[in-house]
Amino acid sequence: MSIFDAFLSNPEIQAVFEGPSVVGAMLRFEAELARAQAGAGLVPAAAAEAIAACCDPALFDPAQIARDSGRAGSLAIPLVLALKARVAERHPEALPFVHLGGTSQDVIDTALALTMREALALLDADLDAAIAALLDHAHTHAATPMLARTLMQPASVTSFGLVCAQWAAPLLRSRERLQELASRALQLQLGGAVGTLAQMKGQGAAVRARLAAALRLRDPGATWHTQRDEAVALGCELGLLAGSLGKIALDLSLLGQYEVGEVTEGSEPGRGGSSAMPHKRNPVASMVALAAAQRAPQQVAALLAAMPQQHQRALGPWQAELAAWPQLWTTVQGATRALAGALPRLQVDAARMRAQIDRLRAELPPEAADEWFDPALAEGAAEIARAQLQDLRARFDTLRAPTSKDVSP
Image: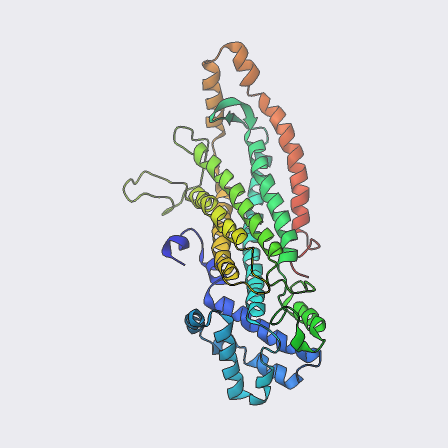
């Protein structure tokens, strides 16, 4: 990851897709594959445990595996070779059972599902905080009058609470869809060389079920080596979320301009400063979210473009897809984290909002001022805001409940 990517993200999400995490996930696959095959009678139990013991990430050099993958054409090939070397050194009798019946795409796609599950947990926690903050503002400011603007011009009166409820609604919908899509997309990949599991002597389905349960991933019932629709659907939803976050950020940046000054991001030492102008307080959370809204569509497009894949194993498109996933996750989670930190600390200037309405009323004929810019119109907006807020809170509480659907079986 370049330094220019890093400052739009955060160390937690970056670590999910760095070498140690991905290699660790690949080794989990290899360890649990051997155990699942032992459970199905394909591998001696002692050999499976010996293999699992050699899958200790501390025994592997992720940087070397990454370097060797350039020549090999796959991350899995140098990893499996290194694993076989460890097993041959410590438990040579178990060597024939390493990576039995699996293929490179099995280990890589499954590792990707495991890392994306970690990424989703980070994103979901920040999305929860962002939604909660907006719902709180919607409640507090349900009847706070402010100008509604259409085509960038004053149009009538709304309430800031209704604005916050409408900001929250698409975030909540995205959170609901992400959980549903993840329950299908975060799935085991196990098909062997061409998707038939022919080397598992009729026990392929049993091994797949055991392995999926051990890794807490969905058992898809078949390979999906070149059928990428469920994974890409999850990626498309990440793109939608980036757009919704960008909408909030754009509104906040406009409302926070000095000439408007109705809502601003909270300030703190060292945040949003200028290298030349010490008086400035730049809306950096909005900046990160707007940058994500610019970048995510191209990252989603890369996933979509990679969907036509040749026969039973892709030459190029799959590899392009793999490279796009970390960029998309770090982009969208970075934006979510930025707004999750800023939204609870918004500085709402209700007096400035009222003053803007009053100033405009003074410039208009009385009949136009009373019809379109009477602050009492905020009460109508408040009724809508409270009704929407009731629905949003009920759905939000359902997502937070311990009984809500988990992203893995």
